[in-house]
Image 1 (tube, one colour):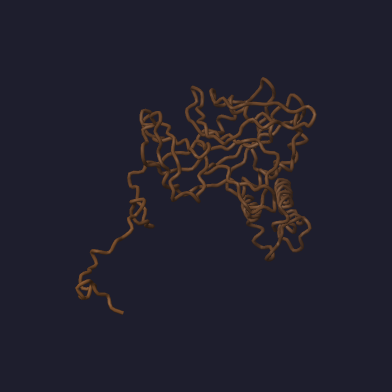
Image 2 (cartoon, rainbow, N blue to C red; image 1 turned 45 degrees about the horizontal axis):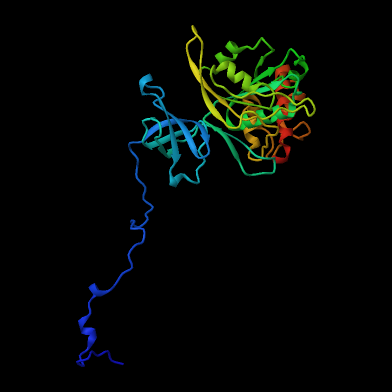
Length: 353
C-alpha cells in the first residue's frame, strides 16, 4: 500500500518529528520524583498538642524569651504514614512567625528517647501512641469514689517500665478512705508515692518531682487528674468532672493529650512539662516486651541471668534462680518484696511470656 498525494509523490517525504502532536500535561506540573528537599533551614520545636490534623508547636525553647513562640503547623505529605504525637521534637519549615493565620509545615521528627503506648486490649497488636519523649509517668488514683483498681495501676507500671519511664504514684481523696491497704500492694517497688486530700493537695511536693522532667499524667476518669493539673499549672483550664453515683465511673473530661509547662513558684527555681492525657478505663499491653519488665528490676535481672533459657521467673517456675535465691534467704526482706512485685507484674502479662 502506498501513500501518494494528488501529484503522485510520496507523501511521507514531507513529514518530520516536529509535526507530531503531543497531548499537553493537563496539570502543567513537573514529573514526580522521590528526591525530597533537605530542609536545612528547618527549626526544631516541641509538639504541645494535636487537634484534627493541626499541630501546636513551641519554637525557640531554651533560648531567649523573646524568641520563644507557639505556632500552628500541618504535616508534610511525606510524613503521612508517620505518627506525630505530643512530646515529639519536630522539624518545622514555612511560616514560623507564629502570627495569626499563619501555618508552618512539619517535615521531620527527631529520634525519640521514649514512646509510651497502649493497645485496645492484650490481644490487639495495633499500638496507640500516647506521648513521646516523656521520662516520668505520674499515675493518679483515688482512694475512693471511684474505688482504686490495683490491676489497672499494675498495667500502668508495666507500660512505664517497658518504655523506660520512671513511674510515680499519687493517691487522691484520702479524706474519703485510708489508702494504706491499697498501697501495701506496691511495697517493694521503687515507687515514690504522694497522697492528697480535699484542701490538702501536696502541690509543692509534687511540683519538685516535676522540675527538669517531662511527666505524663495518667489515670482512670474521675480520680482528680485534671484537678491536680489545674493546681500545678494555673491557667491550664483543663475540664473537670464528677463520678456517676449509679455506675461509680468518672466522666471523660479531657478529650486530648496536651503538654503544659510547669514553672516552680518562687523562691524555688526550675520548670518541667506536664502532659495531661484523657482518662481511660482500660490499658491494653499487647505491644509490651515482658523482658523489659525484668530489666527494670536491676538487681533481680542480674540474678536471673543464671536462669534456664525460657524461664518465666514466676513463683511456680522450676529451676528459677530468683526463686532459689528467695528460698536460700539471699534476697532479704526488701529483696523478697521486690521479687513479689516483679512476679505480680509478670503474672499480669503472663500470656506474653
